[in-house]
Amino acid sequence: MNGTQNDSRRLFGLTVRKNAHPDMRRLRREAGDPTLHGNKFWKSSCLTMDYLKRHPLRKGARVLDLGCGWGLGGIFCAKEFSADVTGLDADPSVFPFVDYHAELNGVTVKTWRCRYERVTERDLSRFDAVIGTDICFWDKLEAPLFNLTRRALRAGVEQVVLADPGRSPFRRLAERAEQKLGAEYREWEVRRPMKASGCILVAGATGS
Image 1 (cartoon, rainbow, N blue to C red):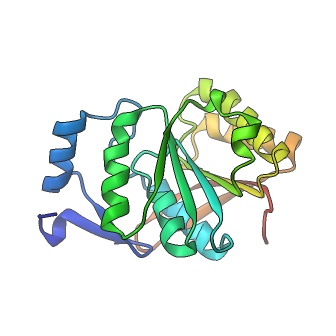
Image 2: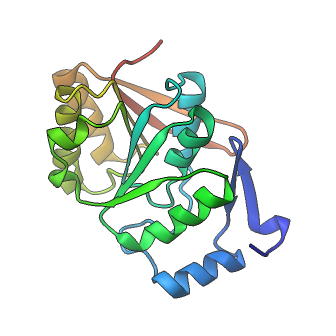
């Protein structure tokens, strides 16, 4: 794991490689570039981590990280809460980046190739919490994510936490979840260690 200090950043206790880092270039050569926007660190991950820092999961929680990309939200949960984390993505080319960052941060994350609409209520019953960051970027993703959130609550998942920079498909998803599922939808801003702003949707145990 070579590179310089400028090729990495520290976020909420995690070391995260930048795309310029030699290891990231190597992984892209070996795995190919991810096709569903899982090709870099997304700043909304800071919103997820900041929210969970303020509203912690219980130790050892079983966490499903939807559309995990590099898996940083799940890796944060594994490191901060000793969570048993599964990173789900439809694009398997992201999984080498998940494995790399998990090892870099001293944790283990399982991976699962699957699309949102194929995640069943029975699948979801194996988890205590579901998280997702920057995953509702197309209009066509709004319905599958609403339905998955509803299935998760029916399956007994304690909490669903989704974060986004504030795109219109996500806001429609959040408003629908507020009306139909009793979810909370709030603006969220982080100033350190990186400036980020957007929205958090919390369904289930909403905290205060």
